[in-house]
Every structure is written in structure tokens, then in C-alpha cells.
Image 1 (cartoon, helix red, strand yellow):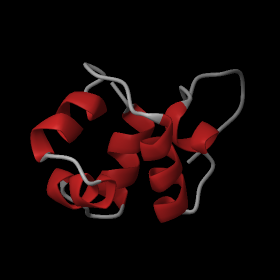
Image 2 (cartoon, rainbow, N blue to C red):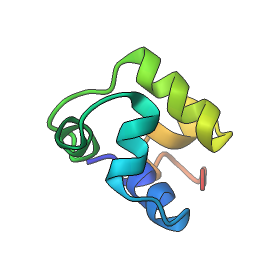
Image 3 (tube, rainbow, N blue to C red):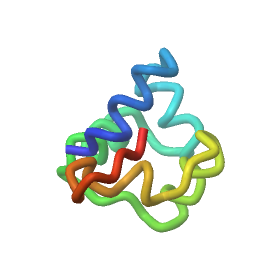
Length: 71
């Protein structure tokens, strides 16, 4: 599960449809990626990083790495 991305999407009041459109993929494909069933491509990670103005690490690394808080 991509918890950081899920929380970021909800914080920005975005639906899966909106993020899927940003990535140019279907809603079903995006849902599988957000749930961790399928991995994001490097290109998709760059697009999300650019859209949210956050580093890929802030979006895709687990939040519980030491005392680091990303979002």
C-alpha cells in the first residue's frame, strides 16, 4: 500500500480518477498501484513528484524510517 500517496491524494481532495488522468492510465490500473499490487514506473513516479511538488522519496518511501517525517 502506498500510504503516503493515499494520504497525499486525500489531503488534496483528489479522486483516483484525477491521479490516473495525470499519469495517463486507467483508474483500475491506478488503484492497483496505490494498493501496492503493481509497482509504479519511474516515469509515473516523476509525474507524481512534479504534480505534488514533493520528492519521490517523500511520496514513495515508508513514513516510519527512523524519525523522518515526510508529509
